[in-house]
Each structure stands twice: as C-alpha cells, then as structure tokens.
Image (cartoon, rainbow, N blue to C red):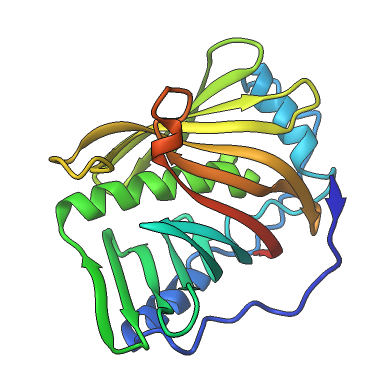
Length: 264
C-alpha cells in the first residue's frame, strides 16, 4: 500500500461535448459534504467482511464522502491492447469516464457515461470521425451495472448509502444489493484478512460475445491500493467479463492504475 499526497482539483475535460460537460457539473453538485465522520466502532450492524473492509479503507474521523473524481492511466483492449489516459467522476447519481486511447494517427477519444438514468458510449478519431456510439436500453442497463460495481470498489463511503443493503456470505464475502434507476444489482466483494478488496463481481447485462444482450459475470481484480485523503482504495486493477471462469483470458479488457483521487 502507498500513500498519495493531496492534489489540485481534477477538472472536467474541456474536450467533452457540452451536454457531457453539463452532466459532469450536475454530478459534482449531486452530493454534499456532510458532517458525519467515520467511526470504526459503529459497524456492528454490517456483515463481518464489510466491517473489516471499511475499517481498513477509511481512516477514523474521515468525513464520509459518497463521490470521487480521479485520473488514471492503463491499457484497454479495443481489438488489440491500447494505452489510455482518463479522467472520471463517480457519484451516487452516475459516472462519466472520459479517455484518450491509442497513438497517433489511430488515437481515439470519447466517453462512457451513466447520467440522468441513461447510458451512452461515444468515441471519435481526431475528435471528429465516429468510431463507436452506443445508447438505448441495453447500454443503459449495462452502464448501470458498471456504476454499481465502481461505486462499491472505489467509494467506500457509498457503503452507507440509503440504496445499499448488505448481506453476508461467509467470513470473506458479502453482497451489496444496490438500486440504480430501474435496475437492482448484487455486487459481491471478496476481502482479504487485512480488509483489502481482492475482487468485486456482479451479474451484469452485456454482450461481450457479440450475441444478444444477457447477464454475464463481470469482475474487477484489485492488485494494489493507495490512500487518498483518508480513503484506501484499489489503485491497480484488471477488469472484464467472466472473472473466475476459463473464459477470463478472453473477457479481460481493462487494466488501469489510479494516479490521483479526490473524494467529495
């Protein structure tokens, strides 16, 4: 585990379309800085792996925040593995992930988002030539699943949200049932003996095999963590479809390292 120094404010990328920039601003305003400080002795109502994780993830006295802005870099598989850099905002009301991937002359940029109850992916080459655009009910449902998994993995304060119900499985695993828009998601965390997240998984709507959309196992492997402003969160991760099965090598499509994070 490493500890990161405070950073300056992480701003919305100016290259995003105006409607996405407006949605980013709405997400920043969707949560308030409450006065409730984290008390590690007030977790008796939670399953044991959840309590162990939260005591590890949140320093005593840290104000409970339910939103975060962060920057990251890594690799994403779009046919082949391509390097990327990205900014993201994640709040109880949605997320926006804005990135640039690949190298000139094949560099693409765009965003994935779930905001105002709808999901969208919009990617262009040179900022002009459309590469991929997706929206509609299937994209919205899949994006809501991504929102649920990232809220659990990256915002420990969200564990106390009014729309989250926890149930234990065993000494290391618990399920967060989260209502997001019209959808309910069961997100499973697997916690090591010290309280660090090992994996975050859920049944997620998608079409990773290019067939009709249906439920597939989606998961995140947490390989290292960093402390930002009193929160210790996964900072080196691998994500994709079919985690824990023989199809993982086919389904993995995302590897990243979070460089800076600001909870608010």
